[in-house]
Each structure stands twice: as C-alpha cells, then as structure tokens.
Image (cartoon, rainbow, N blue to C red; front, side, top):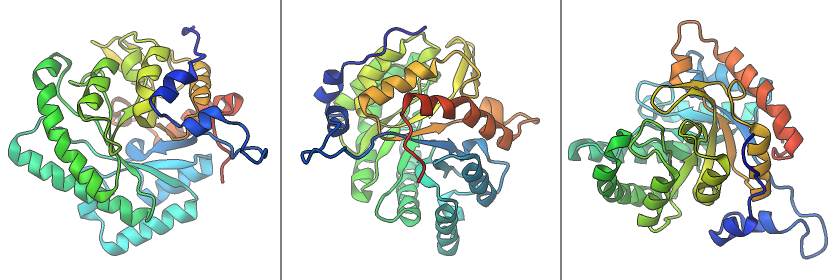
Length: 318
C-alpha cells in the first residue's frame, strides 16, 4: 500500500491550486456548489494505426470524455498536414463525437542547437494555432517532454531555463498553456527538478507541468510526496502503469501494474483536481506488431473507469 494520502489542503491552497473547489461545498447563497471533478480521456498517441475520425468514434463509444491529439511531424494531425478545410472537418468530428480536446502532444526539446530551437518555436506556434482552430475560445494545452538524459540535469538545467523563457513568450502571445512533463529517462526526471524549473520561470501561468506518476514510481518516489509538490503546478495528467526500475523499465496499460489507483484518485479528489486524466499508451506498447489500439483503449477504460466512479473524481459525462 502507498502511504496515507489524506493530503493537506493547506499545502495546495498555499500554492493557489483550485482554491474554490478545495474549500467550499456550498455557495454563498447556500445552494450546492457546482460539482468539481476531472474528465477521463485517451491520448491518440496510442491510436496511430487508426484514422483520426475512427479513433474519435471509438473513444466516444467506449465512454471517454476527452482525447489528446498528436501534432508531431509525420502524424495525421501535424499542423502542416491540416488545411483549413481539414481543421474545420476535425472540429466537426470532435463536436459530433462529444469529446473534449484536452491537449495536443508535441515532442520538442529546449536542448537543441540554435537553428533547431528557432524551428521549435515555430512548431510550438503552429501547434497553438491548431488548438485555436479546433477549440475556439478554449485553447487546449500543448504538452511535451524535454529530452536529454538524467545524468545531464545539472549541466543543462540553466540552458533549459533560458530556452523555456522563449517558449513562454510564444505561449503568452498565443494565450495557450505549454505543459512540460518530467520523464524517467529525461534530463528533467524528479519532482525536485520540476519545482526548481518552475521557480526559475517565476511560476509563469503559461508554462505548467504535466504529471505522470509512472515516471516517479519507477524511482520509488511516493505518490503523496510527488503530488504535494507538483499538483499545484500541474495542468494535465497522464496515466499508465509500470514494471521494473528506472534503469530497466517497462510501461504498461494503466491498471495492469502496481499503481494504487484508488489511493491516487482519492488524493486528486481531496485536492479538488479539475483537469484531464488521459490514458497514455507508451511507445513500448503501441509500436508492437500485435498491438490492438481499440482493445488497449477498452482495457484501460475497464481498468480505471470504475475506480474513478468509486472515488467520485470523475465528472458525469455531458
């Protein structure tokens, strides 16, 4: 079992996380407050083999609330591959499927050389523009890992800060949150590193964190400790499971490994988390020749949806 997860709300409120949801169950008028909770989605990173229209239909029929679309080069929804008409069509498909577009996945690194860094800024801008086209008035998050290797952290962290300041300028101009996700195999790989990075960027509202406990579980970092430090700075959550260690790891579908999701979801509920919880199928799984994206989405839903309901974390589907 994981340690006791009755996380102090004072810890979260001190950092300004979702204060209203965490504090009140009644409005000033005495009426019940609007229900708070999370939406449960699936990242299309695990459905590259399916046409996007089919992937949206499948996710909707399974029962998911939201999706994450991949906008990396050579993927079906790369911005450079989508004309104005294609974007309008995709927007209509999202509406028809009644799925919220929670985020757009990129894969860019602040550790690139100067020429590549300039190209990355353009890519981020195009991703932001795609988000505006698909969800006018409520732009989805752009999320990415940061690259590098764990042993590099001390040598590259100052360069990360400098480069991410340029990312923040793009995000602020486009009014789009960019969320960076620590990775067990990346230069940014610990909660302490993530907090340090956010502090150096003066907690910009446009640069936030993605939280994925699998990367900390592999390092035997307790769930409670990682949530207390990172959730106040987090804008979305990926879920998947793990086996092995940080040096030799295997990612699994959520619910197929050792993560205690009841404790996990109860902690998020106590904290008043209201963002997206998105199943991410690792490339270790979805690149296998025998991988079935529909069965993976169904299995992940079957593993987690009852636990989300039991803990009361998930909002009723619209």
